[in-house]
Length: 634
Image 1 (cartoon, rainbow, N blue to C red):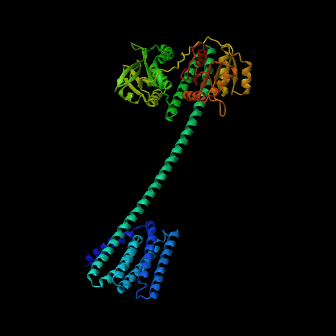
Image 2: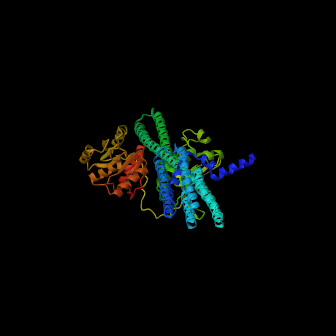
């Protein structure tokens, strides 16, 4: 028996939703009531129409009009109380906190409303007859139907309202003991069950909707927080990247300036040193070159890691590039007892010319450094060949050396920063292990294939693969490689604009020793242009830095003004620590904007540059053909 009672109670709780509603949080229950109250005007309108219809129907019957008026007053008082309840509930800012108290009041209101309509059913059905009884039943059922969506927000209130309004009516009809009464009673029982069942389902639907909305709100809020965190992280990353970029630019500039000055002073010292001090000066020169190479490579690796190198892909003929490489590395290879040669080719690739040339220079320098002059064929070779890969035409450029080769383990680490194989560790002055890591970074930036083939005792070959050029042939002509001529002298004046006083003072004797007069200035101000005007016909070239300080003109802008003041084209050399691609972008933007600009792109020399390179860059512009575009001089 206790088991049967427990099962019955559990069924009733589940059917009426009592256990579920008690488990709801205050916020959820408050939201459910708010949604249900949106239909409250419908319930009130139904009660008004129903009560008005009943009064009109029974006004002319034996019912006392005083009774009808009194009954109407009681009903109106209940409606007013209900309206006051709804109004106060809507205005209660603490309704979530007080929701349990509001639920109790709502249940009391449901009990009162249900009792009024239940007594209405008894009184009017019992005393009425025929059509009036049917109309009374229909009105009561209609009012109950109109009210169940409102009271379904809290199942105990719906149960009380439905049973109190429908049970007395059902009992009054059943007490008539007629066949029609039995049918109507059955219908009323079914209607009561339907209202309770539908109310339970509606309660579940509204509750699920509220819970889903609450979950969506939480998800949206969580998403908003995550988006805000991501945005804050992005801004922090961007800010950190900008800070690093500024630091890199400052370090790039500040490190190259003293190295450039030191190289110039060492060059002057080498030319004037005595035989007794020559070994010391030579060792200082080697040390300076080693430091310069290390700084250059560290800055290059850092710039790649910061993403400061954007490739500019265009058609590039390999024949002129190979000629420049042979002119540059031939003498260095000869000093080591090697032969450097390139295999003639007439192919072109789609690549960034500056980045490709830098990668090949690193590979060639590495090959010369590690090649063995005692090899039966002591040579370093650069060659290119066409091949088909999955129906596409590619060009593979190979750099072959005659070194000691590498083991499989060394080949797997050779492109890591600061890694040197056993051969490099045994050979003094073999570098710092950054050149090949830069090649890998360039290959990744260009989406180029980078492979290595090497065996101990048989040398190595590094290969770079690029798509064969498909774009039209460029009209840009490359300038010939500058030819060094230490005995050549200048005539006229060289304008020098350099904001670093150490470097400016170091360059003065270099140009003066070649017979030139130097007009030197830290910035291109009015005093500089006034002095320039006095020597207008004597100015033979301009050497300038690109970055001349904050809020000052760039080297390109200075060169454009100098050319405009002179009314003619002169050789311009930009000696700078700024990346070439940044200067090229500025040159293109000046032309596109239609502002004052140079008639041709200047020679760009990266600091630290050799004094002979600076002089050769000026001479090459005085005597050689001039390029038509921006991708020209090196």
